[in-house]
Length: 270
Image (cartoon, rainbow, N blue to C red; front, side, top):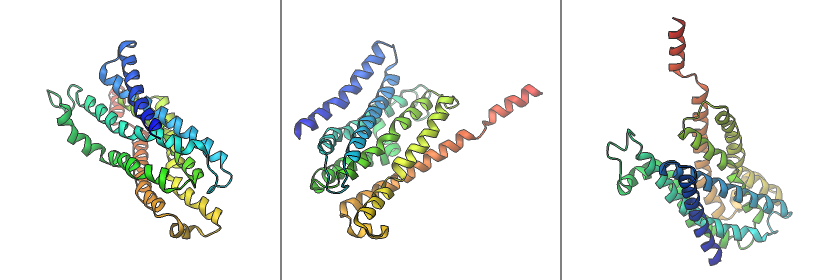
């Protein structure tokens, strides 16, 4: 148990540092660019690992409540430190963005890390609370309170990470002002579909799957499900709906023509 926690605590920050140094030393990237891209690479890799584990676990459980898989608890132990690391990585990315010359929040002299912390918490408070909840509540709920049951459901929960690589790629493309490229638009379509299927529909599917297993009406599932499951769904699902609404708003903005493009065309025609 402690060995896997220690391995995760070393693996994710270590991969971040190695990636950052590689981009700086071998490719000559600036520290800010290397930090931002490295954090996205680590998040994407964790997502691929989690979704791969989820596929293996879910496909191996014929009885969705009683069957188990050795990978379930092991990956929970290994991946939990990632959420604490990611809080720090997001903060470092935010701080480097504030150092960009002319940034409206940075001012002329930039911000120290201590001065940037309040702004980071205001901007990323939902994500920080989400990560803290994953460690403080979901970790013991998944590892201890399940009592070895429901590995199938845990595997399906891992599949929520399928949408993360496209989210990370979208953020990198926006960071480098590639919003009008074909890659960004194709990635946006995949991000919408994967986020909707893997996160928005996730909790309704889990309740539906249990209703089929227990042969009870769907509306009765919350009455018989463990309170930890209901609490987790009640807190996490609204976040997914909110983030999905932001993705949809961003997609709509991309579909609208840019005013300055129309003005330029008018000027050329005149």
